[in-house]
Length: 222
Image (tube, rainbow, N blue to C red; front, side, top):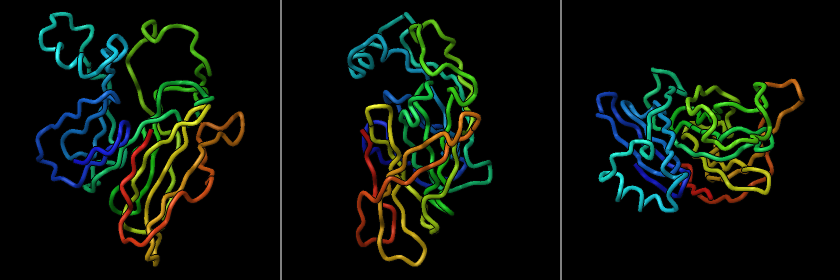
């Protein structure tokens, strides 16, 4: 496993029999089993402590479970048959639609499909702005797919990260197109095509970088 920056992680291919691994970071994400199942933790401790490190150092000594991470939801983004690794990121893609940070998952093998998941937003009738403290909302999460696309037509997979904007975040994707000798990083904005749409569409904003390479370059988000 390689961790490149806060909110962006890669999980290489691994057999199904692998025991559960936990990535305890402020993004609250970890993968278990065949590493193609994405698990989500509501890391409430980060709301109360200015430092995740400080919380981690004191968590074992606490008897109050309210400040400990709790398992909330899981989903398998590419189905039970997918055995390749995944690249994982979080960010407020289409932030104007409200809701919590999106989870972005891409395949490190096969066609490099990218999927974006949400626990609720204006796409499915949720409010665009939350007027109450997050502590007043139910912390249970049912994630559903809000976008799905293939940034590259190659077979070497795709890596993802997000980069902050004044209204949310944009998506970064790295990969290699079929027949190309160059790897590249593309930037996308996720937009709602009309007020009735329930899925987001990627709009390519431009190419951030390109260079000689046969594999997607490692990305780090902000």
